[in-house]
Length: 54
Image (tube, rainbow, N blue to C red):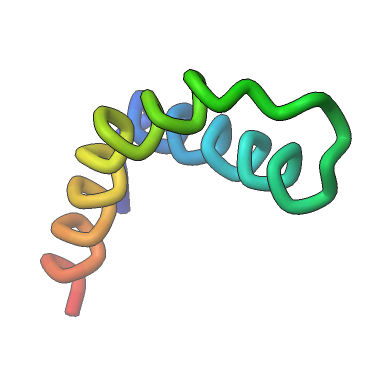
């Protein structure tokens, strides 16, 4: 469905989400900003991959 590289990035995002939601670690606001400004392209890639399957 998605490339191996994209699946690795999405898995890392899920881990990052868990850190944010469950506050496992101290939150680095700079890392959160980076994720929101650069890593969202990977989410868009995932959406396109799923849309191709529909």
